Image (cartoon, rainbow, N blue to C red; front, side, top):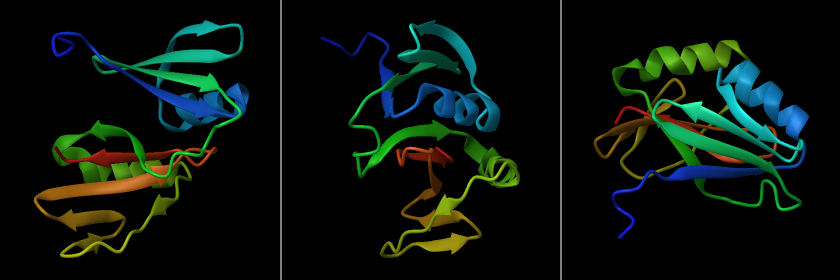
Length: 125
């Protein structure tokens, strides 16, 4: 039933102004819409990302958003690191790390957090 419709990622944040600095200034997303200082909508490729103010910000302990960057993963990771992004490093079976990029199980992926602790990542596919 829903498979033919686009989906939108939603991220809870404590402070919209702080979130804007990160999502616009660091990640380079452009605002598509905003509502009363409580929500900012960003377009990312063909997808949308809604960032909204919530008292429950940062409580998700799993990956919330993945950007599929293909073979540009190393360049994107370097560009994010140059903007001050600190990457998360996880111990995962049968996985090694090349710098900040985890490699294994047929994937290359790097995890990082936004200012509220939402877990985000970039992946090769």
